[in-house]
Image (tube, rainbow, N blue to C red; front, side, top):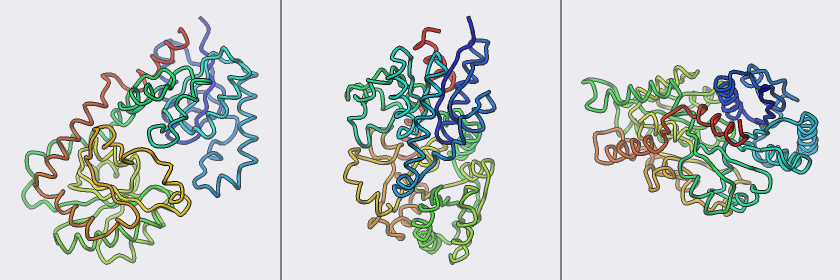
Length: 386
């Protein structure tokens, strides 16, 4: 049987990671390296993809940024779809970035109605615009889901067939090392150990600008409540200098760490965290770090917040099916409230114990028995009859 010809569209770093892992697994399971065409980043390029263009063009954050680049985005959608149609692959794999990848998929489906189209990472139909689930049936044959609550929701909304394949975080060696470090300390902290609070203001410049001052004030209040508390802030490379400039104005000492290794080490040592709402909440839950979620919306997002239909923005809460971590937004963001709750979670309290038990539940619900990339590859090959 000839090697699989796979079209892939990954519009952001997380999708590039997922796509590369899946392609690697297809090669392992079939014994042949797939022939790739489409759009992706350095990891997919390492797997043999010649990206049609630099995929960082698609990493636009904010309404105004999208509007400013709209003509070029429309051109890139047509360029990508036309290249895939001309290549006539065995399958089209679209990964996350639904505003781009799903528009490509609709164009391809119109020209190649018999081509199997697989969507890796379900759009957040459970959070907003649920009508997207049923609309996907017109151009998506199967969805590879990364959250265990999605199969039931998508089925109820009339969406396409869906398989929960697991989440890459479960397989991340750095996160697993942090979890092991936390488990080793669960039965008691070493005497004389200084407690650690992680501060996580977000990975985007706008998030850091809005939330950084709140976390600085919360750290000051927490240091007043618990003078022994130390503070660590893992910073992404593209916001490191912005964060360092902010922390200079704080009146508490805060150690800034950079890089994945230092980040996971900090997760393994932390007693509590105050974090911006996002995927980092799931990282903290899987590592076993009690935490609080907070966020300040930008003006456009605030206007659109009425479209959100989910009962929580925190993934740990969605997976557990009940409130595990507290969430504070905009006017609810009071530094002293965050500090008092963080102080309680860092101590040996019933609140902390209940949260840690819920983290164990979340981890058990997310496990699928094999690495996520392995199950994703098996499912895709089954869908296309390979």
